[in-house]
Amino acid sequence: MGIRPWVVVEPPDRRGLRRITILGKTVGSAWSLRELRRVLGRLGYPDDMDLDDRSRVYWRGGDSSVWPDEKGWRRRVVIAFMLVGLLGSLALHVVIGWADAWGALTFAQRLVGALFLLAGIVQGIALPAVVDYWGRRQVRLSGALVLLGVLMALATTTLLLFLWLQEQEFIATVLLVLALWLWSLWALRTLIHERVWRGIPHPRKFAAGVTATALLTAISLGYSILYQPIVAPLHFVLNAEFGTPQTDADSPYIHVPLKLYAKNTGGIPVYIVVDDYTVRGYLAEFSASGEGMKEWNDDEERVRWQWASEAQAFESKVKGEVISAGQFQGPGSTLDSGEEFKMEKVITLPKNTRYETLDAVLQFAVLRQDRGRLDEEFGYQKLSWIKSEGRYYCPPAGCGELLIHHGRVRYNVNLINVTRKPRYVAAYWSPGVEPDAFISSFNFKKEKKSQSIYDIYEGLDENELKREAERYGLTWISVNSEVSVKGLLKQAQP
Image 1 (cartoon, rainbow, N blue to C red):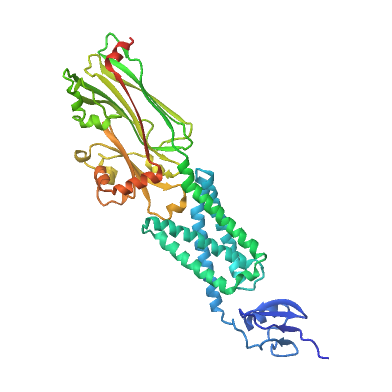
Image 2 (cartoon, one colour):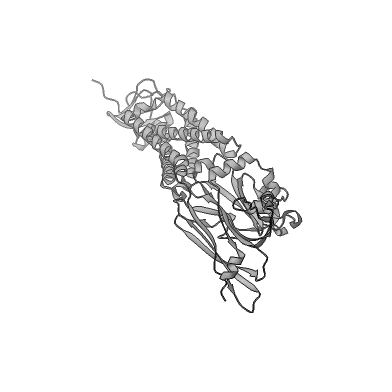
C-alpha cells in the first residue's frame, strides 16, 4: 500500500482554476504555478519544493504545466469591464435618486428616488461580487448579485432612452446612458453564457423579487409623473376690493384703499413666477345715440387689459389710463397649500377727477411645485436698462425699462432632467406693461449679444412654449374689480 501524497492538485475547472487539497481537505486554489507555490508557502512548505515529485504532489487532470488561465488576461478584462459598467450605473442611480429622495414634494416621487438609491446600493454590493464570481467564488450569492446589478442597469438605461426618444434632444448624458445600455446588454449576454443562475438559490423566488421590484418602481414612477399631477387641480381664492375713501377738507386729494388678497385653497403648493396689480381709471363720454356698442375695440389697451371685453351703448370714446401698478408677492416666492397673502395699497386721486370708473386687476402666473423646482437665482431681479446687467441689458429706447427674472427650472422627477436639455423660466414686469412669463430652452447667459425679451419671445417656437407650460403647470390666475368713481366720492370720510 503506497504512501498517500501530501498535496493533491485537482483538474482545472472550466475557468482554469485548480483546487488544492491536503489529506482530503481543501486548502486553497490557484490560477498558476506561482499561485500554487504561494498557497503552499503560507502552509510552511519550502519555496524550492519540487512540485513534480510524485511523493509530495499528486496531479490530477494534467501535470504542473497545465494552467489554462496562467495569463488570465481575458478574465481580468471581463472583471474590469464589469466593474466600470457597474460603477457608471451606480453613479447614474445615485444622481437620479438623491435629488428625488430628499427633495421631492410628494411621497410617490420620494419613493421613486429611494428605490433608485436602493438600486445604487445593490450595485455597490455587486462590485466585490464581480471579483469573487470571476475569482475563487467563495460567496455563493456573488453571481446573483452581479446579475441583479446588471438587470437594474439595463432597466434604468432602457427607461432613460425611452424618455429621451420623446424629445430627442442631443445632450452629453445620453451618450453615457447609451454606453451603459450597450454595456448592460453585453454584461447580460456574458452572464447568460456563464449560466450564472445555476448558483442562485431559489431562482424562482429571485425572479419574482426582481419582477415585483420593477413593477413597484414602474407604478410609483407612473403615479408621480402622470397620475398625481393630473388629478390634483389648482384652486385659488383671489380678491381685489376698493375700500372706503378717506379725504380732508384742506386737501385736494382723495385716498382710496385697495385690498388685495390671494389664498391657495388647493392641495398643490406653487411658485409665483410673476405677479401684478394694476389700477386703471376710465374716461368716457355719454352717447345719446347709443352708438357706443360699435366702439368696443377702438382702444387696444382697454381690450388687452380688461378682465372680459365689453361694450355699452351709451358710452363713447372710452379711454383708460394707468393710475397705479406694482407687484403683489414677488417672483420666486411661494404660496403653499392653505397659505394666504394680503396687501393693502392706497390709490391717490384728485377730488375733481374726470374718471368715470376705476378698475383693479390682480393677476399672477404660477408654477406647480409638484412638477418643477425653481432655482434660487430666479428670485433675483435684473434691471434691463442697466448696462452692468450684461446679457440682460437692452437699450430702454427699444425695450423700455423691465424687471427681468430668469432661472433654471427642473422637473420634479430627476429621470426627466437627465434626458432633456435644461429648461429656463423667464418673466418680466414693468408698470403699465402687461407682464408675461414663459418656459423654454433659451438661456440668457449663453447668448452672444443682448436681445430684447420681446424679440426673444417672438423668436421661440410657439408649440414649444405651449408644451413646456403644460409640462410644468405654468398657469395664469387673475381677478378684477370695477367701481364707480362718483360712488366712491360719496362714501369719502373725513
